[in-house]
Image (cartoon, rainbow, N blue to C red; front, side):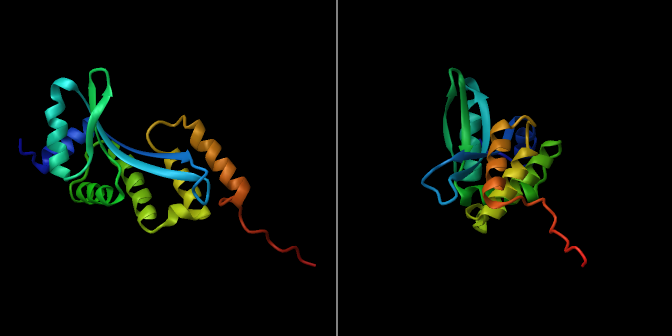
Length: 163
């Protein structure tokens, strides 16, 4: 099955998800790991679509998601950079493009190694708070912990008092 770029854009607009997780990971220098992923979930009767998307993007894993659901999941940073490049050349048409733009920012920050710095990790946490659904208690807790440990990014510099 050959997929055209326009078909992929329309399908991902309806069925795709750009997600960034931040998980506690004591082995990491900052104590957290950033895990971005591009996912598409389908009923098992349409699993061939996921394999076609995997061939189209030339990366990812197709695996069972739930009882009768399968997913294509792309997590490798180099592959995600290719996915981002594709959707920048072929923009999504729905509101999902807003989340995609935020996802693309995270991928660029990671490609620059910013997720390994306190400032970059806090920036990524702030971006993820504004993506997808708004009730991200875990991301809010992580951001608050990072701000407490490394200082708040949003605090203006203190002005010197005359005198």
